[in-house]
Image (cartoon, rainbow, N blue to C red):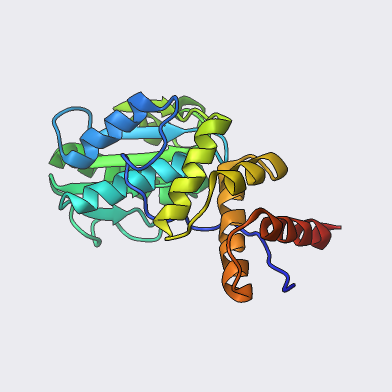
Length: 229
């Protein structure tokens, strides 16, 4: 069987309502309001451990905001804010993993935050810890805490199974409950690793012209384990 590396994969595009909220219902509702352009807090900061789903929720909000006609600005720390796209009331600025920004990037995001507030636009940002604990400029940390701050709660196992099946269906893959449950039981339990395994299973299924079954999944996981030994 051809060796398949299980690297991090890009999730299929899912909106907020297609995502499994679990204990994140309040978070999902806040993002739904932002994506819909409803009145209320226009700055949302999401934090949690790697694999918690914080980046997924940011992308889900972007998906819905775009569908609602908002202009998206994916924050690029190398772009000068005043030379980039202007921020207006129908703009959503998205900044993922703000803890990775260097000093110049932090200054540029600080400028974008000010533009968001002045224009009535919206901002969704993510990081591994709450704003007060971020290793960034204090003035930027203050602005990231301007609005709503949510700790992303990890999904329970049953919710992870549902999330995997929804990811598969978004890719057009006929993934059964038995295969999803087997993957959850026999592989790393964080969602990025599970989704990466799903992607590898899909590639192997196409290469071998086989259905997405437990025997095929066993082969994919076995080869990955052998590649690490």
